[in-house]
Image (cartoon, rainbow, N blue to C red; front, top):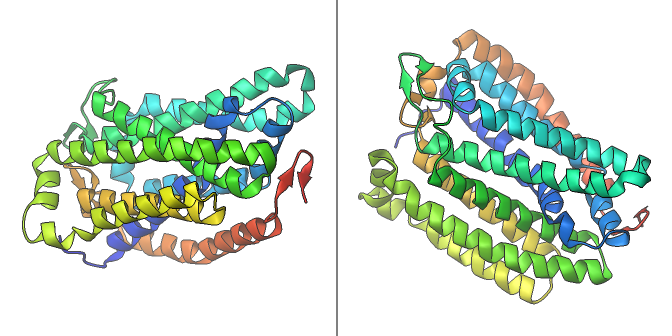
Length: 335
């Protein structure tokens, strides 16, 4: 499991970082949408919306960077992954559209607010489920012949992809509940802590189930996690996961505000490390490596210059937005 830091490797880490940023940042507002039906219509739902209204669209910048980066840096992988997951990609995009439209219209069309509330929930749920199932479909393997996808229209649908889809849904719900526990007060905060404990338990069970199932998808995964000396080298990952899970549960029990959200982010980070360990060096697991899928070197250098200029700006305005809207929210906005 050697890592050679050439251009393809650098781009693999850039795209992995962009995807992780999208997951943890857009994950909590998708999670709030998933939990939306469990909050009372009126004040509580208005508070939930206001908690993410200033940042939700900026969070999706990372999805554009991750998808665009994959297309530009690893065009062969893009050409294989999209046909393999077209129904999931279409479902995800439609879900994000419905979620975005609901943000605007539930305030401007109060006569149909219940409809837009349902659209917000449905769009968030569908987008989260599609993202999780896409991950499962890639991990279980994509049928590639030559340099093209050779599988069927529904190859992505399996018990494993349904498991990873459900895992992402409950994981996003955990992030959303922890974010609401920071941003709201009163009964809404009490409800958020209760939802966070339930989502934390479901997330940990899903992580355990996926971790147990993944090594049996292919010899590469099993050898990576259960053969010496990697078994010893990678042991800190599950140990750290268990430790963070205990800290998360205790923080939720004490009704602390910021620590649960940070521990939930740490769980996602550890999950990303585990995913990277399992997949490396494949960009299409068990079929195409990052070097086989990489764009020409000149293209990678040209794009790297652009990313070097743009990514600091994205990080800067994202940090500024969160700083400006750092307070608690009420029914009518921040205070």
